Amino acid sequence: MTAENWTKGLILSLITVLFWSTLPVALKISLGATDAITLTWYRFVFAAVFTSVLLISNKKWLEFKNLSITNWLWLGVAAFMLIANYVLFLVGLSMTSPANAQVFIQLAPLLMTLGGVLIFKESFSRMQMAGVLSILFGLSLFFSDQIKQILSNDYTLGIWVMFAAALTWAVYALIQKKLARVLSSQSTLFFIYLVAALVMFFFTDLNHQSEYSSLQWWAIAYACLNTVIAYGAFAEALNHWNASRVGMILALTPVITLLFINSFAYFFPQLIAAESIRWLGYVGVVFIVSGSMLASLKK
Image (cartoon, rainbow, N blue to C red; front, side, top):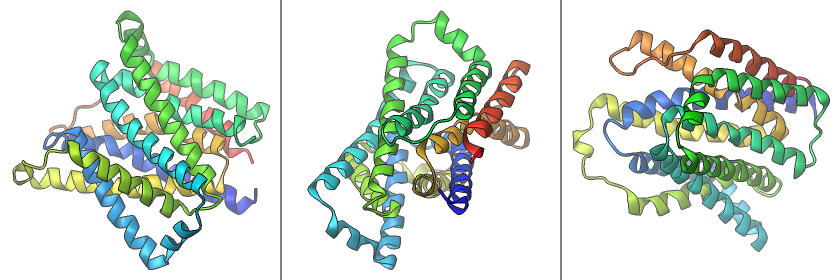
C-alpha cells in the first residue's frame, strides 16, 4: 500500500464520517414531512440519477459489458443487502429505542473490519487489536446509559433485528470492496441505487408533497446529496485502503454525530433537542478516538 493510497483512504473515510454524522439532523427535520420509507426512496432516486449522469459523462457504463455472470450475481447480492439494511434498521428502530438502535448499528463497521481480516486476509497487528479493544471499551462508556436500559428491558427481538441490520451492511461493504477489482465504485453504486429505488417505489407515499415546508424540502435535499457524497467517499475509501482500517475510522461516527447534534441544538433549539452526554461518555470519546488512531493511522 503506497503512502498516497493510505492518505486518500484516510481522507475519504473522514469525509464519510463527516457526512454520516450530519445526516441525522436532516433526517429528523425531513421525517416531520414524510415517512422513513418515502424519504429513503427520495435518497435512492436522487443518487441513481446523479450517478447515472457521472457514468454517462465518463463512459463508465461500458464497464457493465465486461461483467461475468458471477459478478452480476454479486452486484445483485450487494443491492439486496443494502436494501435489507435500510428495512431492518427501520424495523429494529420500531422494536427498541433510538439510542439502543444507535448502540447496535455500531457493530456494522466492526463486522466489516472482521470481514476484511478473515476474507481479504488483511494484516492485523497487535497495535490494531489494541485499537479495537480501545474502541469497544470507549463505546461501552459512551453508551453506558443505553446499555443499562437494554439490560433492564426486554428488547431481545429488536436487538437481533438491529444485529441483522449491521450484518447486512457489513456484507454489502465487503462485496463493494470485492467488486472494486472489476467495476468502478460509481458503477457499483449506480446499480445498487437503481435497484433500491425500483424496489422501494412500491412502498412510498407521494400524496403529501404540497404540504412540505421549504425547510423540510431543504432537509430532504441535503439528505439526498448526503447519500451520494457519503457512499461515494466510502466506496472510494475501500478502493484505496484496507476495509479493516476504514471500519475503524467509521467507529468515530457516533461520537461526531452526538457532538454535531448538540452543537446544532445549541444554535437551533426549536428544530432539534440536545442529547445528554455524561462525563463518562466523554471519557469514552477519548478511548474511541485513541483506538481509531491506533487501528487506522499507523501505516
